[in-house]
Picture 1 (tube, rainbow, N blue to C red):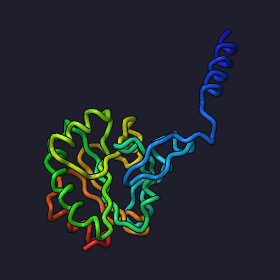
Picture 2 (spheres, helix red, strand yellow):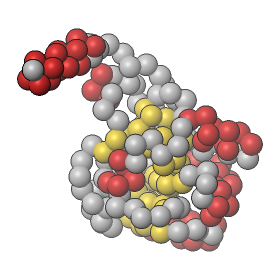
Picture 3 (spheres, rainbow, N blue to C red):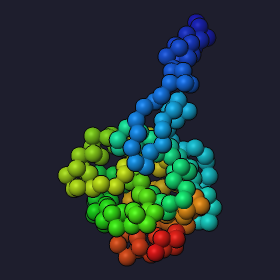
Picture 4 (cartoon, helix red, strand yellow):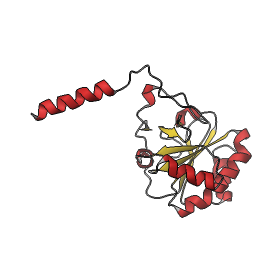
Length: 188
């Protein structure tokens, strides 16, 4: 009986899964075109975050409904910030991250503000109320948070133009510390 039930569940899963050719939809900045291969959001490898090594790659749903894949941003310096609306230091540093992004975007800075384990409406409401415009991604399952071996928030990772992890900062960051980490990643 259990084998029949498992077989029926597997068949239903396969039948309901979209074809590989279907478009998963959505686009935005920094966003890659979505495809069926992107449906499995989260960690794309199990590399730990090690300075000087390739940054752990991931794909997440972006705030505008598209997807963002870290490796697609090679050629830019990427500031990956993990945050949540319940985290007071996160909320205090996001306006500085936003201002830095506005200042250095034309110099090749990309920001991914990764909201951890909250829904889009909650994260969007905070961004809207605080006039934060950096690109947002949603780690609703916490898989990328675990991939990056995090234990608290906020935490930030700085990826150089070659895709290597150049600097890490755990906890709240001042504007001065952000600028220092960006310089280490190759963006003075």
